[in-house]
Length: 120
Image (cartoon, one colour):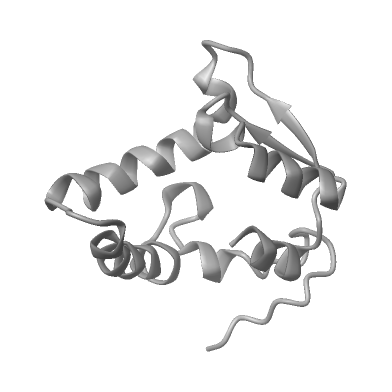
């Protein structure tokens, strides 16, 4: 997914991340190092420095993960994909002027010269 985001928006100089095990794993560290992407850690005990992702994680947990009993990661994939499509394509977001992220995204000032084209 990170590779797809880089293809869409270009490589970031850095990623702001928390200190969780998913972002301190050697595979992720190696991936960042190979691409020259710095990892900027939030201060311990300061989740507000990562508020956007914390909000997204809470919403995903409340609206998908807490609704089902999963026995494998494969079982999580379909409802997660369906929810993410709704979240990005249809659901209005208050902070984005009541439009879905993928309608808001192509604004001219976003992320420089993105080669990503939104299909209509």
